[in-house]
Length: 111
Image 1 (cartoon, rainbow, N blue to C red):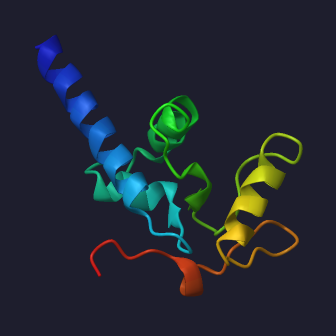
Image 2 (cartoon, helix red, strand yellow):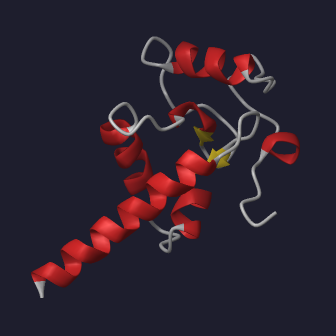
């Protein structure tokens, strides 16, 4: 039974990583959007954990994943500035509070 759980976790993790890797330059996705597309709409925290633990190793565009209100979730001095600069370098407008207009920049994986 444990092997089944492990394989589900691995397959969910793999789906999350593939989805994040597929976010095009100049677009963003939310943690919840990635979780839902990967098969578990309640796993947005797991998406955040996967990004934290795997983004460098798997060369994921971590900066393109933001929270459901369009905001950067990282704290000022703890990655906020780096994420903001990376988004702006791709032409994504980020306001002073670290928010992105989801109507303009949200990725639609089905399109």
